[in-house]
Length: 361
Image 1 (tube, rainbow, N blue to C red):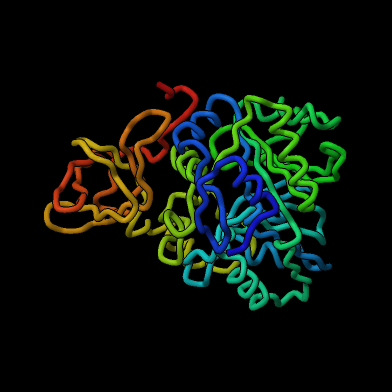
Image 2 (cartoon, one colour):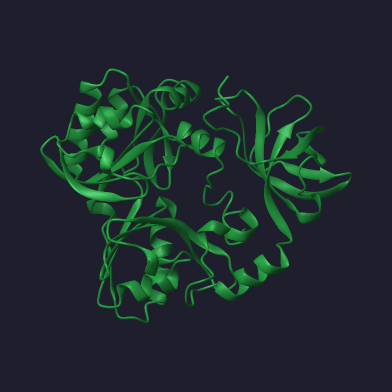
């Protein structure tokens, strides 16, 4: 297994380590729930150095990225970040990612760790624009500081006025004497920043942030999943995949049909116009039990879907899930059943966003 530059820090902090996307990563340090609530209430810091970073450079870089990406790259200004997907011609998702625009001839793509090699192969296959595609994943480390106090904690480490860094933008700045790139996107439903830099810079910044902020909690990948789940953000392989298109998953906001041609456009447009045969919806437990990834969803004796992600939501205490179900059964309020081992439990279809600022217990 690969190790990030912060591996020894995680071990010293007592993290429970697991394999994830080929890396030895922390799943938690104390408990998933405790770390989850630390992010909701204060701030947490995550090692996300396993993520992939791919640079696109060339005279036709904008043409290329706009062609392979579902969202509208031509609408971007410098220092803007945009969320979207790579899709196959049949609409299936290759990956979901963030695109950072440096200028018209220079883009920075942040992709899922488990898909780096696949994405690179796919990008080269579709490079009809003669751009340079450079994998910088192994040379880049990244941490994310998330939570309502994230800005104030990081502000102590930089002269850059972080209040001017708007949502889904980025900029170069100096943090603890290191030249880094900082963005404001997030994967938790809270405010926060991502810091990209050299291995040495990120290790020093991680250590100094924890030393300078006693209320900053180191967080593992376990609560990263529960946090994104509560605010209906997708995980590739669960809510998005080759078999689950952005339209099925309810992320049509990241697919721009007003721009020029892009891979998968015709199929996705038809799916949007005709309405998809399946949809990702929210489920809430009517009976008692915990809904888990992979459990089958039934209407009577017929299986009509499966759970893509399920937990007892740490913030609200509800047993809830996101599930891919046949469109005929996707209406809010519909009662269905989920198979938990050898028993069936009743669930109800609901909105798939389980948390906002007003839903804390």
